[in-house]
Image (cartoon, rainbow, N blue to C red; front, side):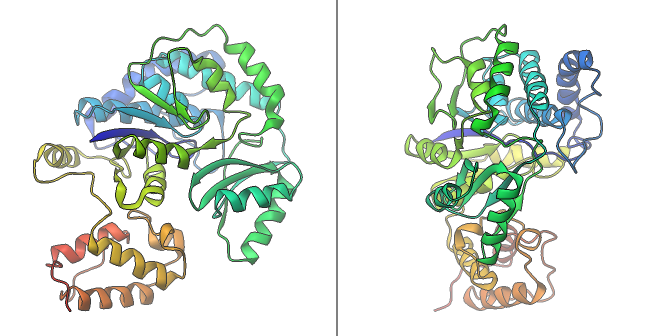
Amino acid sequence: MKTAFVFPGLGSLFTDPFAHHPAGRRFAAELASRIDAVTADLGWPSVLSEPDLTAWSPLGEVQTYHSQLSCHRVLLEEFGLRPDVLLGHSLGEITAMVAAEGITVEDGTRLLCERATALQAHANADAATAAFMLSSDQAATVAAGAHGVVVAAVNSPTQVILSGPAGEIEQLANRARAQGVRVTGLRAGPYAQHHVALGPAFERYLASVRGIRCAPLKTSVWSPVLGRALGADDDLVLLAALQMVRPLDFCHAVTELSSLGVTEFVECGLKDTLTRLVSETLGGRARVWAPFKKRLTETDVRQMTALLTSPEESAMTSSDDAVTTYLRESYAAALEIPEEMVTPDVDLEAEFGLDSLQHHLVLTKAQQRWAVELGHVESPATITVRTVAQLLKDAGAARETA
């Protein structure tokens, strides 16, 4: 059994993630002192300052990097996990190379700072980036019919990122929504992400970071930009720059790692953005775990550690069981969306607008099917397939009725 740590891109942030976890706060403070020593020269606030969750900022990128490295320390030193491979999405690829000790924490910070400087120098207020619920083939056709639009990322079998001129992206989004396709605008910077139009920024960036020295990777790193594992001859600094102008294929990376024996994917960052994409891509072939989906407490750590060391249980729970499969099918039918979108940990109310009647109908049928009486048991605070499945299992949902 092999494990991959996955590092998300920009946007995986929330305030004070280690507020209730002393060890996490200590790791975060230690890393912040090293990162702030670099950003102070630019006059930036500390990475421990309140993040701006409403808009893109260069500091936000560095705060994302800092939170991921803090999560990495917790996974290694608190949970005792040792990954077989690291996989980063967009700027998360820089974090992955730092976590593999190919680049120092300070030089990783310099890469992000110089990246922001180069992008700001070539900012374009007319650029936009958005997520479309389309397959890669559908997205390629859509992009080909618009001026200057590219497929910036393939996230899963049914989600892509398109970037390009804001007017073109808006027109594509309006047409897609009219056809029932879900589109979400992204809080990216004033530039088209992973776009060839950033060639001048790429050249400036590469020239500014050429002095950074790299070391051999101590853990394997898979690049969704290059579509393969990094080798001893790969230029890590060049790869960090190539992200500006080349698309990434996270879906292909996950599929390839699965074929190489990786069965467990752990989110090494805040929220559960990437593990949801993994579940959508691999279904029951993967076990996923997002330990930093919410603020950790010491009790959480003790419980998770116990589960990880138990021979009978695992904190990385499989989505491939009968109750989960049934619930995914039922919620997808109730919401009239593809089953692939109903991953085990997606918030069904926040993401898809699940209402109380739809939820009640699914629960009623589930109680009949699994011979369970929930009575006046309250629904989970966050309604996901996994939390509802646990609710049913706790009530004795193990006997399917004929």
